[in-house]
Image (tube, rainbow, N blue to C red; front, side):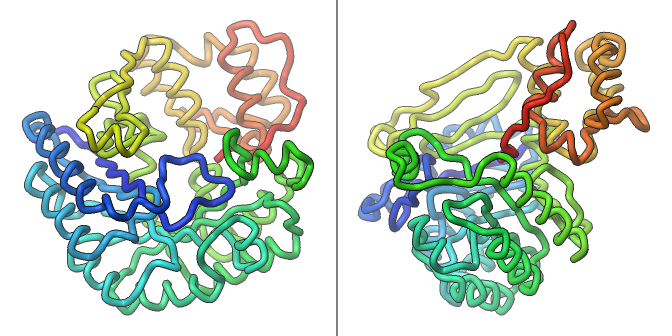
Length: 388
């Protein structure tokens, strides 16, 4: 059967964080049960198409999925198993805000089959958390980890953010140290991106808030790489680190351009060479609107995506797979650019893979622009902010 990753979007949150541009709607908890009904209805509409697939990963994201009751989460997982064949060893992840958890809810989640928890810690500095609009404290993170372990979770991930407004290197090192002491199996370390349309963007535009520049962001990224690798976490993607065997299988599907189905408002999918998405608005989704965006990918689209996404991973891009998929010898076509970038120690060709070096990962945007041009004029020089 064809492998498939399933994403389920839960758009509710208790309050909107200052940096968030995701589809999330605070103060709409009165529609949660209606939303679960709509989500299950959409799942049922895919039942026939899913018959030829085996779901190997499920990711419940948001928003704040942990706002849902244990009963609602059980209903969702029952619906998934009714509508699709789920692999016996499937990775089933739920995102959670540490300030929304208790022991009973976590036990209910585990009983429903959720076996991986992704906790949005972001920082272990309470002042920075308040400035971001987070509803939890550093103590809540530690408490959530303890409760999750007691509930039977043996696969935990912590999300951390750097280059925050006013953040110092000392604060970032302290966050890394405290995260490591909690011994999660997986850690994500993302640079803050100031997105247009968010309160943080407006504050920065008005000069009320300053964020660290690109050079500082790269310094934070290097500190994370050094500390986390020293603690036994292997970097497997630009922003993601794991103990051996605990890499996020769901996200790897995205980076490898495997097929995935997104269910819920604002959920995106890639199936049969087509990208499509549901409407972003909660009310629009509840009214029955589906697949309001759809694009059939060209061969050139797929080639560019393969390069951009696979080089985010430390394993890199398999050149033989690229040649089989597109009938193009990448080394021959981009030989001049590869020679320059190799000389600058930004990329390396080894064991049939094209990989970015650590420095290349810091400059991934510029490196990819160089490689996508058949006859590039010069190698990248400007530093770019590490991508999420």
